[in-house]
Amino acid sequence: MESAPPKESKTGYLTPATGAIIAANIIVFAIMAVFTGSEALSGLHEDMLLRFGANNGIRTMNGEYWRILSNIFVHIGLLHCFMNMWVLGQMGPNVERQFGSTKFTIAYFFTGSIATFASMYTNPVKNSAGASGAVFGILGLWIGFLIANRSRYREDFLKSHMTSLVVFLAYVLYKGFTQNGIDNAAHIGGLIAGFVCSALITPNFPNEPQWKKKDLLGLSVIIASLVGSFYLTYEHTQRRTARQSVALAPEEFKQPTALLKNNRFSEAVKALNTLLAKNPNDPRAHYLRALAYANLRDDNKALADIDETLKAWTNKPEALQFKTERLINLGRFKDALTVADKAIAAAPDDSKNYMMRSSIYDRLDDVSKSLEDSSEAVRLAPDNANAFSHRGYSYMNLGLCDDALKDFSTALKIDPNLVGAMNGRMFAYFMQSDYIECDKQCMETLAKVGMKDPCAPYAVILAAICRKQLGHLPERIALVNQSAQMLDAKSWPYPIIQFLNGQLSAAAVFQQATDNDKMTEAKTYIAFDLLAENKGAEASPMIVWVKEHGNRSFNEYDLVSALLNKMKK
Figure 1: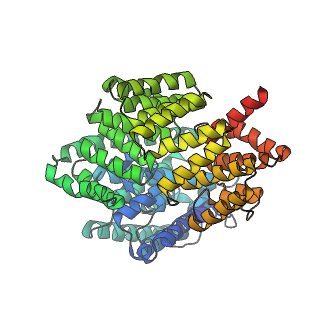
Figure 2: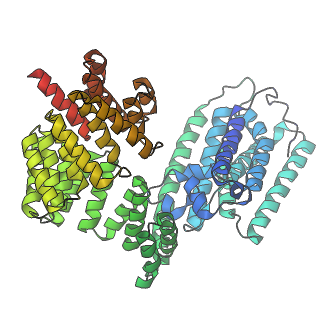
Figure 3: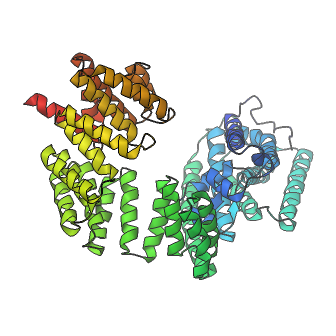
């Protein structure tokens, strides 16, 4: 494909855009290979391709719009990637030298996007990936340029160059029409978009300005074309998938439901993907897949599915509760409050709705409303241990530890194994500086849940700090050393345990606190441990950090707030 450049072109001009695009494709493929091994070389499974950003009309046009561009960096095997990059490497530098890096990049992503729209318009259910649509766009741009500027070239050069281009395009398109797995719609869409693009942007010739008035008009047309193509593809995809949808029989849900019950969430997603390919609008399939994604800790995908569910089940309380929980997890508290209001309107006698809204108010620092809602939850469910435990936390957030302890005790009378109430009672005693009772409660909690429970490390940490405050150092050392041997050394907050037994410095712990939540815990517990040995100067900056930057929904933030309130008094 390489040929001598036209005599007017800048033969010494570097082509960074072509190089960057090729490098990006190779890097993405390398990442795919790292995560999938030999599977990436021979061709990934469709579900794995979708994880890396492949295009699927149903998903792309239902909120995952980033796939419009991400799919042009994803390839279905080593040969697929090599061929696309080889063609781009042969043709791209000529085109980039003639149009300049900026216009070349605009053309590449414009034609790649149009190719994606063409693929979706033709078959919205099919998965597609690869740079070939954008590569064909660059070929179309070059063909349009050669035709428009044929007077600038020798006839023999033009003839041989155009012949090689036409033969190559004819061969690839023929293969696409005669073999499965080749996305000719994307190829043709990209080719036409590139040819049209040659009339919208001007080439760069010597002694001429690089940007002309025509370019501004052309860019406006390109933007309008993208918007129009998106709208047409969106409408067509929605109509076509609705026509293709078939009613799903109840027995078709047996397999994914069983997979969910057996905690095989990734397999459940695959099974539900199959059902949603048959009926993209089925609310039950979206709801079950949302549950699977939530258990896989992918709240964004779970939220997208629950939104699809709510299109059909507008006021279904369970779906509204589920959406509220996802929004809380994502930190979108104001949005969560709006949905929680809808959940309460749909099920005004469900105490869980009030507990969720109470949690949201707590995160929005409206503690009085938080207490109102948790009290309403207790009124609606006087035999529900969770309702009392939840109100206990509301009291504790207000600094009313005596009331909190009463509710935690009531919750544990109803359900002696309620871990949330056990934890709450530990923190309430600590906030009151009742280190004897806090230590006792920590030991009771550990006896009940064991060292493998996620709350066990926090019980050890609180008990260790209490024992330092009480001067019970041998007991502290014994507890910390014993727990260090039994707890999971790979899990958080194990580094804090290592600090307590002298294995790590505070700075080393902070290095392992990789997010705000972990840093909130690390700074709180280390500060309280330092305070227990009268090192207030070292603890003070940590306390201030938690107050100013810590996660306000954490018990640790409440401990710091309670400490600061005592200091003010």
